[in-house]
Length: 129
Image (cartoon, rainbow, N blue to C red; front, side, top):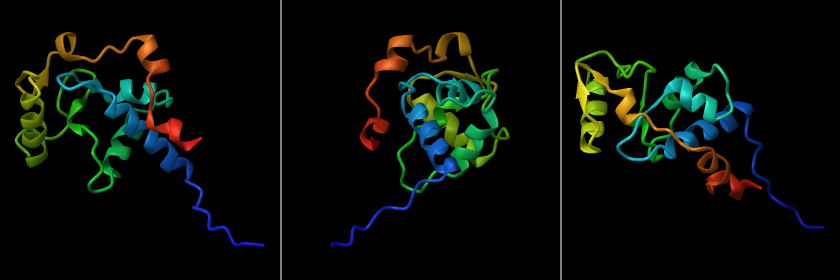
């Protein structure tokens, strides 16, 4: 009988974070989504704060376009003038998103995925089965 090395089971928090990060990766360049919108897409109703927590847990080197996540009112969540605020604004501007007074026009730049995109788009989670 051979010994089979198994990977440790992912915790519920790790699985939730993976769903959140994948939803953020789905936001197209030049668009933004709110924390609550990402939570809903990731299957975490009323989980906007969980999205913030997941972003803080993002592993170094993991490519996730975090800059595309802002508040539901279009505001960059970081304190105006902070290093993080300036970095997020710089990255969004590089994608063509207009920022005025620390805000993004959500009517113009908010990501609006259609149902087919949400249901049938191939995702990294398919590989876990």
